[in-house]
Amino acid sequence: MPNRFIVGNWKMHNTISQAETLIRDILAIYRPHPSVELAVAPPHVALQAVDRLLAPTPITLAAQNVCAKDEGAFTGEISPPMLKELGCQYVIIGHSERRHLFGESDEAINEKIHAALRHDLQPIFCIGERLEEREAGQTHSVIQHQLQTGLAGLEPKNLGKVTIAYEPVWAIGTGHAATVEQATEVHAAIRSYLTTHWNLNSEQIRILYGGSVSADNAHALFQSPHINGALVGKACLNSESFVKIAKIAALD
Ligand code: PEP
Image 1: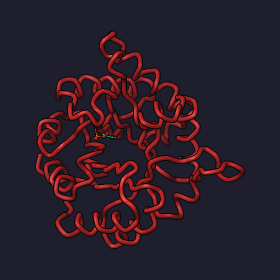
Image 2 (image 1 turned 90 degrees about the vertical axis):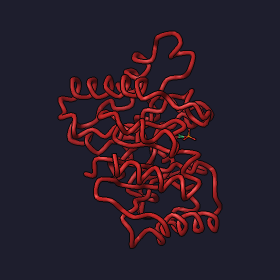
Image 3 (image 1 turned 45 degrees about the vertical axis):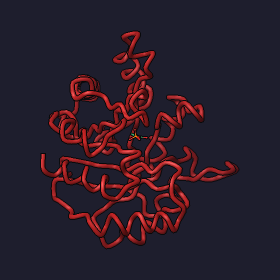
C-alpha cells in the first residue's frame, strides 16, 4: 500500500463533459510516484466516463456515497454492486455534508460501511467534530463515538480496508485548515483508539486529513507522521492544485 493517499472529492461539481476535461487536464500534468496513491471521487453520473479515462492509469476511482441496500425500492439510490460495476474501488461514507445536510446518522453510516465491504468497495470513512463541539472540549469524545458506532460489528480483518478521513467540520470549505498540531493530536488519538480496540498494527491504518487542504498548506500537514494523506475538496477541482498536492505528498 503506498504510504500516502490523496483523494479528490468533487462533490456536486462537473457535468460529464466537464469531468472529462478535468481528468484530461490532470493526466496531462500528473506524474505518478510509487509512494502516492491518487484517487478521484466524481459525481455518480460521471463515474463511467471518468473510469474510461482512468483505465490505463494508476489513478483510482471513488464514489461519494452509497446505499446500504443491494437492490430494491429505494428511489434515487445507488447500490454497492452498481458502483463496483462502474469501476469504483473506494466509496466516501459519512462525509459531514451527508451527515449534516442529509441527516445521515452514525448507525446509517455503519450500515453503509458494512454494505460497501460486502461488495469489496473500500470505505473512506469520514469523521470530525463541529466547531461548538471542539470549543466545548468534546473533540475526542465525538470522534470516539463516531468511530465506535461507525465501525461496529466489523470483522477485524476488514478494518485494514477502511481508510479513515479526519475532517473537522469547521475546516471544510472554510479556507481555515486545522493546524498540523491540531490534526496530529486527533490523528494520534484515532490511531491509538483503533490499535487498542481493534488490536491492529498501526501501519495497517490509513488516516487522511481533510478540511481546506491546499497546495499552500499540504507541505506542513504532511510533515506529521500521523497524517497519511488528504481528502481534498475545493483544491481538487483545479488540475494544477490537485496535482501539486500529490507532488508535495510524494516529496515529503
Ligand atoms: C471535503 O469536502 O471533503 C473537503 C475537505 O473540502 P475542502 O477541501 O473544500 O475543505
